[in-house]
Amino acid sequence: MISSLAALGLALFSSAVAAQAQRPISVVAFGDSLTAGYQLPPGDAFPVKLQAALKAAGQNVAIENAGVSGDTTTGGLDRLDWAIGDGVDAVILALGANDALRGIDPAITRRNLETIIERLKARKIDVLLVGMLAPPNMGQDYGRAYNAIFPDLAAKHGLLLHPFFLEGVAATPALQLADGMHPNARGVDVMVAGTQPKVLELLAEVRRRRGG
Image (cartoon, rainbow, N blue to C red):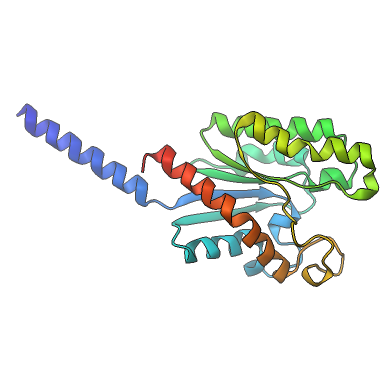
């Protein structure tokens, strides 16, 4: 009788593990207009194209678009709890661009991002930190303080880091909208290709945590 119960328990445990392994990895892309898909058709937004690219690569993943145009790190912190719901496995944290555009004190940006990171880690959510660079017109002192935020936080908290979200897109008019700031559909493709290697590492971290 005991051996039968043990066998049943093992079977149920194995079934639960298998179901967990088969569940799509739930990722939230948490950012601003660069994430939301500013002035683009819904199908051209970064999270949508990233999910398509990952699925084409054989990844079982679902990516939610939690980008809000104009959002700062302060706004992101304010909406964190309701934007990142239960059952989320990982977050692509891509906030901070608007802080630099508005000249917000880098100490505030750093503090907000660190609080977001700490709260996500407390919930056992894996994080990929996506960095930005300060516009040159903000000056060298501001740029040094701001640009150091992302690598510093990634190193301190042991996070994966994609150093610059707009790598290959910034200052390339053919990949931008007319405003010279936001990516067009082709620009989003470049962003997806640039971030995908780190996102694959993020998904691998989730699978390790799941034990499968």
